[in-house]
Amino acid sequence: MGFKRLLDLIIAIPLLIFISPLWLFIVVWIKVDSPGPAIFRQQRIGLRGEPFTIYKFRTMVPDADRVMKAKIEQLKKEGKFNADEFVFQEKDDPRITGSGRFLRKTSLDELPQLLNIVNGTMSLVGPRPEVPEIVEQYTPEQRQRLNMPPGVTGLAQINGRSALTLTETLKYDVQYVKDWSPGSDIKILWKTIFVVLLGKDAY
Image (cartoon, rainbow, N blue to C red):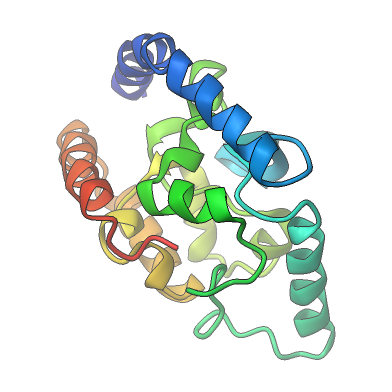
């Protein structure tokens, strides 16, 4: 993993410095647009199943996380949780704020994860980290995605992003882990630039 860590630091540290004025502008915009903290913190599951705190710019109303977890728990309780149908965000999700819609469309909401990259809990490329409630539902095959550091972007993010179901996303993640190479990370980063610029399947 030496290559991944070196690539992460070479890109993340200069980028953090470069975007600091934009970071400040986004924080002010979020605070003016919606009450609550500008930075969203949430527990996710990372490499080898270790929990960590992920950082994002807040794009939803303050209690959105509680609503989503309650929805997942209710579906599990009723035996109706279906990974083939479950999606994390709906296109017209009423929980998304005005500023949040733009930040999601442009993927600017992910910028605080540069802090996760610097502290080693995330990588530039890898499977997107999930909440514990979702990881608990993994099959043994799907748990293979935990064998790589979670990433800001990944194979699933350049092949459908928010439009994918959970099962589809996990298939891409497992494929990434099985086929990983330094070249695959560079290829995914390159394709991510175009996906972000086009704003495709981002909501």
